[in-house]
Length: 459
View 1 (spheres, rainbow, N blue to C red):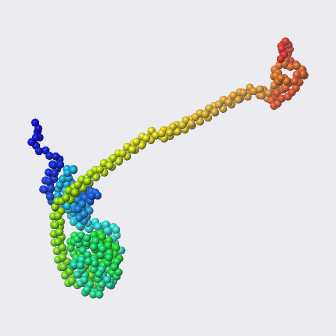
View 2 (view 1 turned 180 degrees about the vertical axis):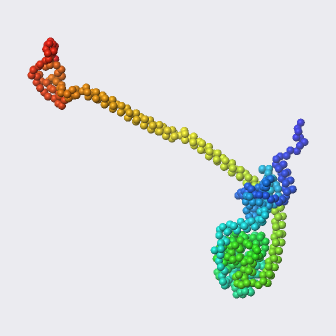
View 3 (view 1 turned 180 degrees about the horizontal axis):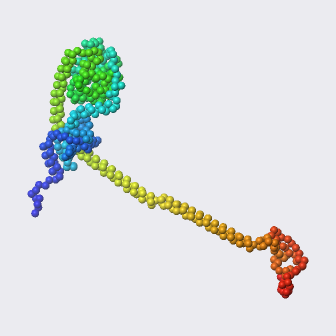
């Protein structure tokens, strides 16, 4: 009997796909807050991190397209508010949040990016007071970088025409907000600073939100103002608005009109109020346009397309790449340890190691042998001394030295030991201690004992 005949059995992939469908349908747009940990930014450009609080942790991924739109860079320990949709990463069976938008908790993303860039440029010295230049007393040519249709250019013209109609004005029209505006502003500042005869440059824009004024917070604009050959006045936004350009410029004007006043003369209260009303109207229109644009972008990001599939595959590639790097690192470390162990063993069995040990033993034996030879020589020398003393005591020469002589009968040279071997007239040779002497026997006088033994043969 088959117990599973009437049951529908799912594969792991099928079950994971069903779970992913449930999550994506029911958690399509969620807002989550938490603290960032395990932040990772691989070469693919995606952003991987974990949001956690005191009770749980949530894996998050932000794909490259959304990361490019970030104005600031998240970091471990930062508290974020994120928006995204829940899904499942099939290869690990983990649920995760596909983040589409994020911002710091308690502070806006643009504000954080503004603070990060401001601190970095301040450390480089771009805001130093000692490098700021004074404005020319009577400028003849004024360069203006602003929008040709905005309120700022009109405010500046009004003041300049009323106060000094003979001034030469060069306007470099640029976009003052939106994509590419920062690059246009930076290029215009650089070109005007190199133009012959320009005495001062005004960088101007009407008021707006932080995002409206963001082009003047871009690093490229700050470095262009810093590198200008002539003084630069920053006149961006309202009096309460501050941008990076304000800190880098040689002088900050609270408004574009005030910038014109600083260059030539003061402006009237009426022009200031008109300019303020115009800027407020423009700000309201720009904010409305920005709100509509943000809603449109939100709807576009909500559409599912092939880029999501590609991004998921890229996430899997990132995961496999990290695992592969870990395996390679472990293998290399293990091989290195084995190689070191084999090298140590090889040293102990190496002919060079054995030869060195044998050489040391040979040197030790050679030293012992030398000591033994010297000891034996000393013993033999001592024995030789004793034998020599004994031999010297028994030597005939010693006897001769005491007055005795060796008698030899000539011509045969036979040693004479008894008078019975002699006859009168025999020739003799006497061997003394220091030489010899020849003599002749004149008479023979034997001892009394020898006379009694007259029968003894003579030799």
